[in-house]
Image (cartoon, rainbow, N blue to C red; front, top):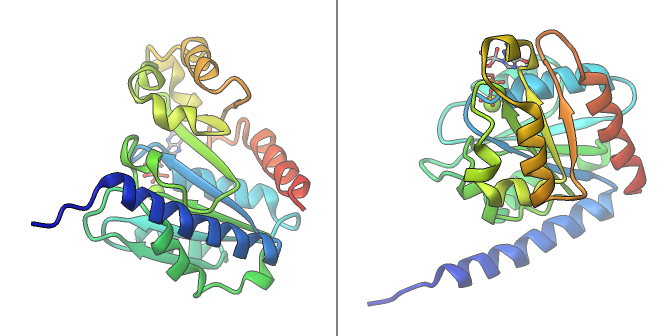
Length: 217
Ligand SMILES: Nc1nc2c(ncn2[C@@H]2O[C@H](COP(=O)(O)OP(=O)(O)O)[C@@H](O)[C@H]2O)c(=O)[nH]1
Ligand SMILES: [Mg+2]
């Protein structure tokens, strides 16, 4: 019987992630890994951010989904280059999948690559994809205990974007509680509050992303 230790798989992933990062750096492309639960509002947020960043940043997207291409079609409709990865059951993207998808993109024509990971607060935490920035998206309808219950994903994120703030009056979500839990895990992390459908907070998050992208050059 052959047993492959998870640690070994992660080591191989780290190697490939480093190669992806080197490729993106050489092309002057800033890689961003967006993680969060299914339905947290990741794709809607990307649509809002790209509208806000029009003329400032040239984005492309890699969409990770277990099946289908609904999100990639949404991104295509707003005129942003996009590659769909179907993981066929896997609950996260890995660096090998990203390496394949990168071959399908014209890196010379973009300056920020946003990877929308498979919706999941657990598996996605352990896999470096070769990004420079990781953002965790949490919606106000998911509960304010999630940083406490899924620490790894919050700990590894440079920013927490709280989405669907327009729904706050209808929930018991406590922004201060989740922000305090997140800051304990990631003291340097930024917290943004966004309603992608109403537009509140989108400009602040977009400015921060543009700054991070500029600082990386
Ligand atoms: N009320 C409200 N609904 C939102 C917001 N952002 C996304 N949604 C809705 O949440 C659902 C899931 O959004 P989607 O972007 O597909 O989530 P994803 O699975 O994380 O990519 C959709 O019905 C969106 O219209 C928001 O800021 N406010
Ligand atoms: Mg999506």
